[in-house]
Amino acid sequence: MSNHFNRRTVMGGTAGLASAIASISNADAKLPKNDVEPRGKTGKLERLPTLDLEANDEFLTSFRIWVNSDLNRAATQRAEAIMKADGLDKAFDMPLAEAFKHRFNDDPVVQMRAHVWLHAQNLMWHNLKREFHGNYDAYMAEMEAADNAGPGKLEMNPGIEPAYTKHEIHIQPGGYVGDPFAGHLYHYGTNNFYSGRNYQDDLHVAMAANVPTPKDGKVLRILDQGCSCGQLTVALKQRFPDAEVWGIDVGGPMVRYSHMRAVDMGVGANFRQALAEDSKFPDGHFDIVTSYILHHEVTAEVTRKITEESHRVLRAGGVYYPIDFRTGTGGRSLQREMNPYEKTRNYASHRWNHERWLMQYNTISHADEMKRAGFEVNENGPASGFGGRGANVMGTKKA
Ligand SMILES: C[S@@+](CC[C@H](N)C(=O)[O-])C[C@H]1O[C@@H](n2cnc3c(N)ncnc32)[C@H](O)[C@@H]1O
Image (cartoon, rainbow, N blue to C red; front, side, top):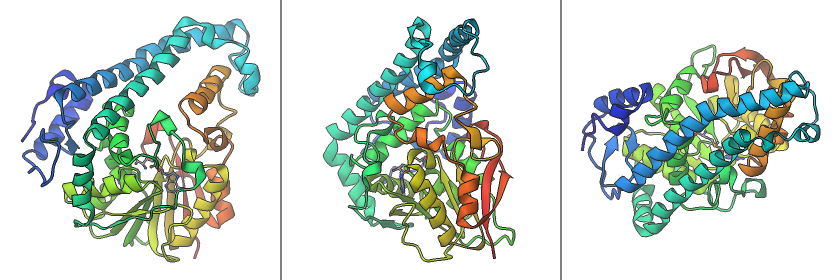
């Protein structure tokens, strides 16, 4: 089934157009065997299985775009007016408890932004969960059928999940490790998070293109830590088709889904259920180690261990490139750069969106951790393209 022009194309903005172009070049992809989503693909995206669910999903995605833009602007203006009236606009060093005293949430627009953002996300997860769990056997059979298929490998290691990974991050039911369809949920759920800009893995393809290579140009093996549903891993394999590319994740359902999706796409990336801080790869194995938004979701102590492990598995001259919120120049003072309203929002994300380790992430410096692990550090490394946040830190393993 080909979908050269779909509702997203006709009714969407430039993101829809990008999807349309990609779907033209990927048109007429054959439906894989055991496919339980009989509605085909739009380019790289397996369509949601019913029009009802797709309509729900598109409504909630459009709603999120509006909340994140117009409503967000209106709420920020209200909060800025409160800060101005209270003489706080430059109070970047205000402690969080003090910031809360200014009662931003008493403003109805500020409050509405916070509530509808969270509750719409909740609705999104539950619509998706109802589909996958409501058709449990069919979705499970589809994953089982792909487990041993190629071109890439899948390695499962159940039981490795540490306690710090067991929570419902982003209010995702079951979180990353507690639901057999965590990969399905994460993939479709984050299409909503990306506000319709990633239907063709567009962001991951751009990020993969920006990942720096070792000075000697040798790229035989690449590791992507915390790969979730494998979008960056696959994009890296497509950029470096001759390299052995591994995506690892603590979540078994994550790597299982990643593998199925890569098989579907005919991409020979490999996936292993493994901890980034204890990957079980040999010393000096990789030329590039990368990760995308893994670190703000682990403890500060685990960030330290992951940085050390990355150093261990890289060969001399190999490149370490963790992508996350403000890793490069200026990343050091993440918490201090926030005004009081931003601080309360950051805390709300931690408390209500279950970003459990976010407050710890705010205290770390990737550059310091990398120096401590023995890397030569460049705090002005190439921008990852993630969120337009400028320079990304990178480390090179010394000879
Ligand atoms: C925000 S997601 C990463 C997104 C992903 N890199 C992408 O491109 O879409 C964080 C992922 O890291 C995984 N994770 C968390 N702690 C981990 C650890 N210690 N080792 C490996 N994976 C971990 C989670 O299971 C989750 O899938």
